[in-house]
Amino acid sequence: MSKFASSKDTGKNIRDKVLIYGPTHTSKTHAALGWPDPAIIDVENRAGHFADRFQFMHARPRTMQDIVGVLDELQDGQIGCASFIIDGYSAIYEKLVVSHTDTFEKQGKMNAVTDYAMVNKRIAPVREFIFAAADRNLIVTAHSQQKYDRTGNNFSKRERIEFLGDDKFRYAFDYIFRTEATGPDPRANAIKFHVEKSASPRLKIGDTIVVRPNEAFYVLFQQRVSGVTASGNTHPRESGAADTPGRVTTPSSPVLSDNGSITTEQRDRLEVLMHQVGIAQSEFVTLTKNISARRTPLYQELTAREAATMIANLEKRLNERNAA
Image (cartoon, rainbow, N blue to C red; front, side):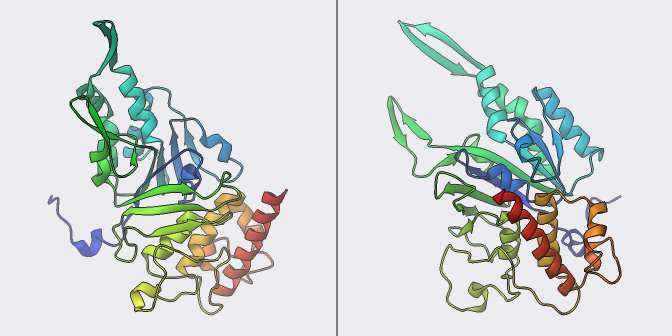
């Protein structure tokens, strides 16, 4: 059987392959968990703090062998999910670096030598999985650091902050975002996601997606890459109108049409809110009782007006819980 297939088929269901990196406490994990139906490999053992806001499959590996086992489960189809998160790549890389670094004393000074060949060999299954992932969304988080180049005994600081790991690995991703905090608390201050790589012609390198409290990065990301704003119009940059570079002004409650079937933006927003509020599919039937005359258990069958009402109700519940 041929390994080739028509692009008309392979291009129908393009999945997101995203790297999000930045300083600690800049909503990297929170942003990743906004993707639909997530499963997370929690290397840093922190995702449990988000269990009250999201529903997700949760793996907490302790060793490199555990990590490879989880990846094998996913490749074999044993775990059903629409999005897979590796949180975080830097922790895997640094653990391997530490375990393959020898220290010794030479001429009264302590020296350290790292066997990077062995580090690359042991982390290869993770990289191979990332390259091969095509049937689900893949979001990888990493920490940032200021890297240096060495010439003899002199070190020169590189121009930009880079993610902690092998920087050559950047080409494995379709989108790369560097996070930046605008205040001390991401629950009260906006987070900036600076675009460093983009597969969408509508999302330019150098742009910034600003995510305010109670907004979902996934929703803003999908609206930008599809060229659709919250009002359903083409993004101003694509229509030729003036646009403020590097700024997204999408409101937390999108303005959506009341006519016709549920829109793509509404479906994405409902998926995000259901995870944030912790609504199971069974509970969704109850919530639609006074909204849909058809008593549909599937939000895909709602009208645009019904979906807008459901979004407003879920956002109200989310705001009330956050304020509590």
